[in-house]
Figure 1: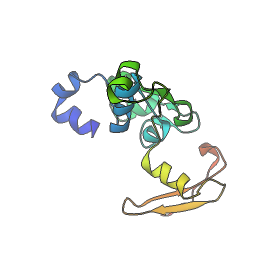
Figure 2 (figure 1 turned 90 degrees about the horizontal axis):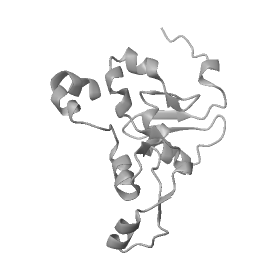
Figure 3 (figure 1 turned 45 degrees about the vertical axis):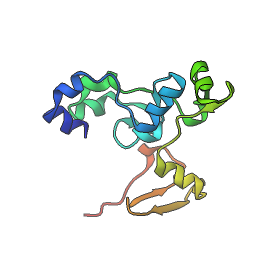
Length: 147
């Protein structure tokens, strides 16, 4: 999507400060913290071994000029923060109400289905996203030649 907008609506990107998923925008509005979870960025821009952005991937896709618009990565387990004080009061919430940025739906579904141990796998619905837990670094995995 970003590549398409870069090509067809560069003026839109010129006005854009952050590239966020909806859940990340809601987290920002509730906590004031701009961030995302590694599972959402795992599809395109991060190294899953380090769970950090990979600048080489931005270059490969020709999108390096937008790298600074991607939010910091905070893992869901580390993201529990209180709702902003004034907002908590306005919403009728306790000042102790915590919000997390959450993981991508597919990753969350796998955990919810119990796909957590080495070799566990799942096939998830219409998105045709297939997952398997592999207790190895990605660089150690050798995929078969299917040609």
